Length: 261
Image (cartoon, rainbow, N blue to C red; front, side, top):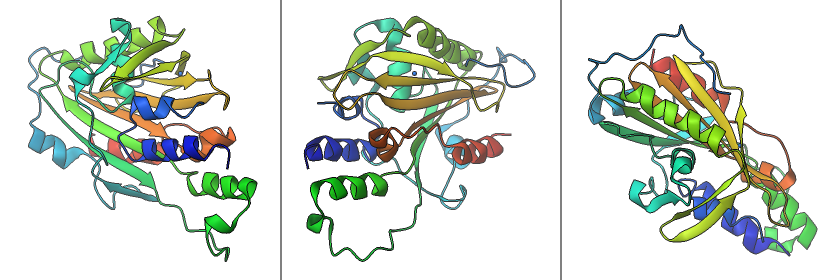
C-alpha cells in the first residue's frame, strides 16, 4: 500500500493527544456570542482540579462514545510553540492545551464507538493494496475528541478565549510550529460556526493541504462557561483520508455543556 506509512502515522496521531508533529506528518481552519452576553466576574475564584474532574465528561456519559484518559497525555505547554507567537493559542488548542494561564485543568478523550465490520475477511494482509487502504480508512472513520476543562480566577477565562479568537483571525494564512522539536505546518486557519453553547465561543479549522494527500483538516472549539473554558479538538483520520467532511463531535459538546450548566 503506497500510503501505508502515512496512514499508520495518522493512526498514531488519533490516539496520542492529537500531536501536531504526527498530524502534520499525514501529508508526504465563528466567533460567536452564544449566550446572554454576560461577561466574566472579576472577583470569581477558579475551580480546583478536583472540582473540574467531577465536571468533565466521564465513562457512560456520552452516548455512542467511549470516554477515558487522553492516550499519550496532553503535551507540555512549553514544548508546543508556533513560529509566530500570536498563533500559539490556536496551536495549543489543537493539541488539547488550555489557553491562557488557568489555575487548574483536566482532560479526557472521547472516541466514537463504531461497530466492527461484519465481513469475513481473514485479515487486512489478505487484501489487495486498494482494498487494504479502503478497509483501513473505514476502520478509522470515527471521531476522536480531546476535551480539556480549565478554570480561571477573575476575568482570566474571558481573556484566554479572546486570545484564541484573535489568533484565529491573525493566523488565517497559516503558520508553522513545533512540538518537542518536531516541526509541522498548517497552511490555513478558518473560523467556523460554533456550537452555540456556553456564554461565548469560537470554533475553527486548521488545515494542512501542502502534501500529496490534499487538505487535511483538524477541528477545534473553545467555549466559555462563566470562568471555566472547555476546549474541544476533534480528528477523524478516515474522514481526512477519504475527503469526507466532519466537525467537532456534537454529542461530546452536548454532554459536556450539560455538566457545566
